[in-house]
Image (cartoon, rainbow, N blue to C red; front, side):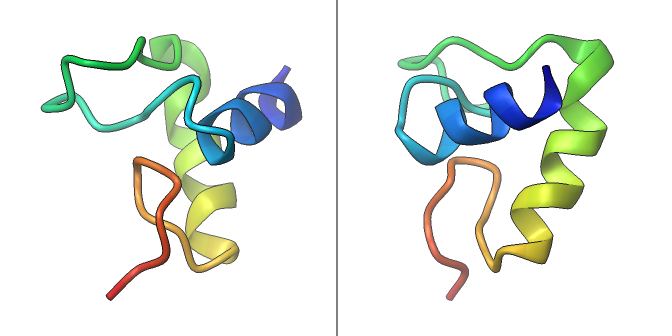
Length: 51
C-alpha cells in the first residue's frame, strides 16, 4: 500500500500536504512512511522536486 500511495503522490493523484485541499490526502496511517519515501526520492509532500 505504501508503494501505491507513493506512486499516486508522484502522479499527482494524492498528496501528503495537509494544506493542499485540491488533492485527496494519503490516509494518516500511511502518510509518515510515504513522506519518508518521497524524501528519499528528493520530492516534497506533493511529489514535486524539492527546491
